[in-house]
Image 1 (spheres, one colour):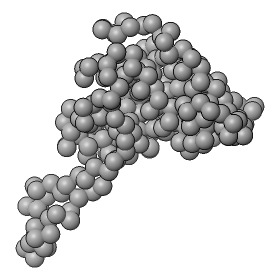
Image 2: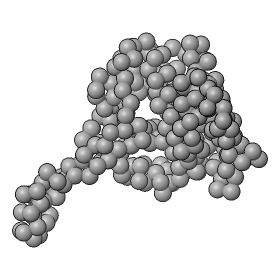
Image 3: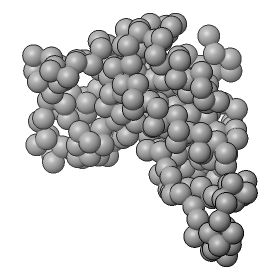
Image 4: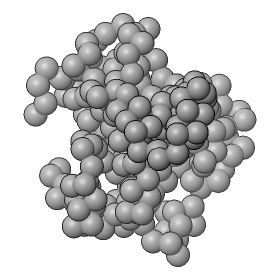
Length: 243
């Protein structure tokens, strides 16, 4: 049990059901229902379409988790504003050409890499959680996520990182949705080379199969309340520090 957090999800039970309903509509492709919906959360997620479904779901779950901590909603902000990662000054020492080094130094204000994850969580305008959202993830994609996280950590050493995915193709037991996840050999090996504490949240049970897309009725996967509540618990655990 997580400290200082309530396990009473009664106040958000209707919101959780709306997320499930929205997921069903988007994945099954019944887009017309969104046009007649007057509910902001339900209609907004549906209209976002499949491409933004995961991001919309993650953002909404963060809002629910923050609300359950009984804090002022205005303290929470969600965006995906680009972070300008500057060139490391140590790099200049490695440049052998004096002319190139001088040119870069004279124009140093232009040397940065614009970077953002799918969702940035700010509490009191402090960037506290970076969330990468994927319909599914395999380990080649995880390498890119870890590189981006490393760049961000140079600027925000205390930043928390989350991979929020519908399906998993990471191997191991990520797709089994157990209470205790042991992960996979490949994923743990990649993580061992990066100083990143990555929280991996998987929403749908069953390993992702290329030839079995979930929008096909034959391979449809249900989104359950249990997986949504588990995700909220992870968000609460990270957010409670900033109450």
